[in-house]
Amino acid sequence: MRMLRSILKGLARSSVLLSCMLFSVHAQEMPVPVNIQVSLFGRILSFDRSFENRAGEEIVVGILYQRTFRPSFNAQENVINLFLEPNAFSIKGKSTRVVAIDISGGPNEETKAMLEGVDVLYITPLRAIDISSIVAQTRAKRIRSLTGVPEYVDAGVAVGVSMRGERPEILINLTAAKLEGADFSSQLLKLAKVIQP
Image: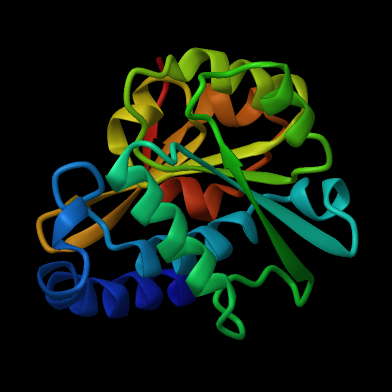
């Protein structure tokens, strides 16, 4: 628990500066810069006691985005670039593979097919897409859903991040997380803002 607190403090210091410099384009949709989100999500998933058994030797991360919506496309590019860096996202030393999933045409059979084999789904800012249709798939396929858009957590995404003052805040929709098969430790839940719709 001390380790997670110190990580949050360190990330908070850098988040304000980084959000002003590199990620101001996303400030209204995603209050926490993408690089801090990715680092936090890796640590958050390490507190999911059932995730290690769900994922194989390789963790497949799907990035759900809209090519036709600039903030979504930019977020997807930023996440993919981060995954090219060593140790950007690590859970217990497992290798990671990223798959970009374009949902510009709305959720359809092709989207469902692309979710096969995905362990974690990161949802970028989306325009005119019903989030409930996405989370229905993450629950059916037991995929952990993550986002940097705080409102999506209220809409059924399991884990998100926001800002509380100058510090990143972990958001957990406990009902959604359980429906996706997550079993988060009490240590993490004490540090997070838990939403139970």
